[in-house]
Amino acid sequence: MKKRRKSTWLILVLFVYVTSMMIYLIPKNQEISDIEKYITIGVSYVILFLLWWVLRRKENLKRQREEDIEQSKINNKRD
Image (tube, rainbow, N blue to C red):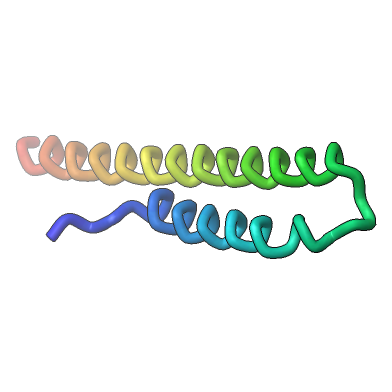
């Protein structure tokens, strides 16, 4: 079975959590204006996107390092 990327499942869980909290809490909050509510929602999703991007980049760098190590081991065995 293929291992799921951390950047995929973590962001999916956080997306569901943030969305459900907003659906539940934002309509009940009458102290802030609608514009502030939309800004809060937008910023939350931007943060999730940035987290996904950073985690994906980190995973790709790790995979590249592992491939480089494997390649260097193969090259050292030949010498």
